Length: 192
Image (cartoon, rainbow, N blue to C red; front, side, top):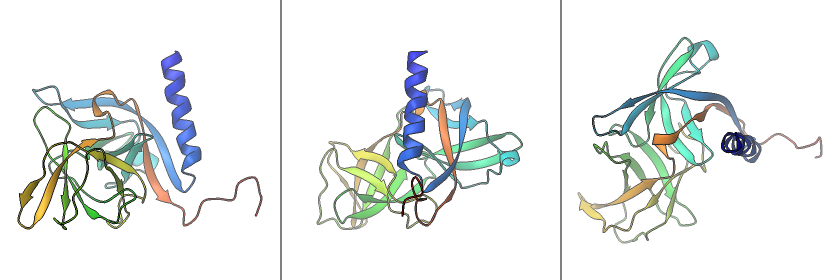
């Protein structure tokens, strides 16, 4: 019970940290697993009956999980940020470097790549990647992952860095589906 209490407290704390996000909380009830025991998709307890629509972001306090791929009735399927078809517009935190996070679809590991269009600006191991909101899908400022300590791979004028996702996909129990974003956070306690 202590572990569950800590998890639920963290969910409530996160909702307080991001009052600009209107969310629905859902439990993870199913995981589509590869033969290599890697979670490929998750199924959650919020669907079209709850106003959930395709492409809505799915997040946790740790960061971006992915987006709604299909919503029917009381359930929805989530395409993970590490899926080979996933693309998310991101920035390197505290640095003026933009790029795209591309899911790797790796058989047995949760990995992604950061494609940096400016090969002159090198990234460091541990650099945090956050959403920048430019893809108009994911709200700005959500953690996506961290640059791994492997040398970048050049590809057609860009550098491709290996990324460790911030979310522990294999152990997810609850998620938030972002249904809308407020232009500015609500006033706290009626003070102006």
